[in-house]
Length: 278
DNA sequence: AATGTCATCAACCGCCAGATG
DNA sequence: CCATCTGGCGGTTGATGACAT
Image (cartoon, rainbow, N blue to C red; front, top):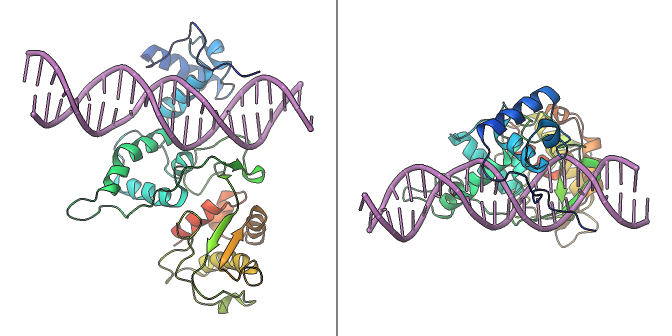
């Protein structure tokens, strides 16, 4: 038995919201909080489906929303995050306080994608982007918070958005195998890069002047990677599965950035941290 | 001024995973 | 274990306004 479409019920309003509907929804949520979207319209006295109410609140009515005027910094961040994460707009939005996934998605599709595809005469204003393939994937139980905290989260400080992944990542390393070293201080030189399955670099391009903590974090990851590399992967491929990530996150729990996350680390966040770490 | 084209973005759709009974 | 419910996500659509002809 299939579910009936949420918004197909007769007698419900569709299309643009009126100011009165906005006020009713805002007042109701301010008084009663978010959640229970299916029953919310009935309780609030709105002729809308719950899904529509949720969307209206999250994308438009929430008080902490910034709208329009995406700054150059935000733009750069969107591009970089898109390089790392692909079309995972909610994850990207989670790194941009006050921005919604819908707004970023629209901005990307209408502005950034075109600009990146067609650099201006004076050169590209933004770093080139390899558009990642779209994928709908299996969500990791261990990494999925009970409810989404997207957009409410300031970057790197709140519960991570739920993470989806289709299959273990395969990393291809184009240099001599790294051997884990018991003494991290003597860990081999950084590889030029470790591209992941989507072609994005998992290691920062500028590795000089990095803090000891940051290096330790990277080293922890490399230990993990190398541990699975040296014996089994003569072809230069490393398979990073959920357990490895979990082990890594468990073993390396010391950095300020990770502590702020308060939960397990996923590869996307790891990649982001490695990129963003001072 | 009328018409056509393009850009923007709010809203909708369909699917999925986790929760629940 | 299974069926269903619920919330969340990314892709797409369509209304609207701006701009060009």
